[in-house]
Length: 185
Image (cartoon, rainbow, N blue to C red; front, side, top):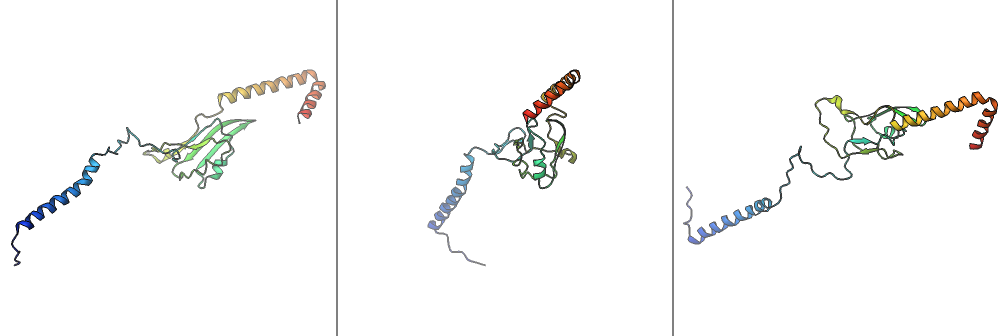
């Protein structure tokens, strides 16, 4: 059995002062955080601010795209698939899909685009229960744009009028058309 020295009044008060001091040091950190504004965000209702250069889900400015396939070639893991049919200068879109099961959000598809039409957005919540939904079509419309259809119809009408004039006028009109084309070159 150990024998403790008798407690002196000076030692007793020193223990009290030490315990109060250590408690105050511990509570200093607690009070500092209690007085700050909380940083907890209620996620579905509120969102944290996202930096400008954040690499989120892609978006496509379809009207600008010329189907050059530069973004698909630049993708290191081939997750971009584009399909469109050209009608002269106009495009008829069939698909522009991006497989997010493969995509590593490296942003290498954005920089080679000559028309600057594919971008990384700020959206990051791409939650689903089915993996097939990760293959995402970026097109805002399929087929041709309304303006493109109008331009194509006007070009066809102009071509038909030219052919009708050619058939009615004979070779004289054809010669002038050929001369105009040579002059344009």
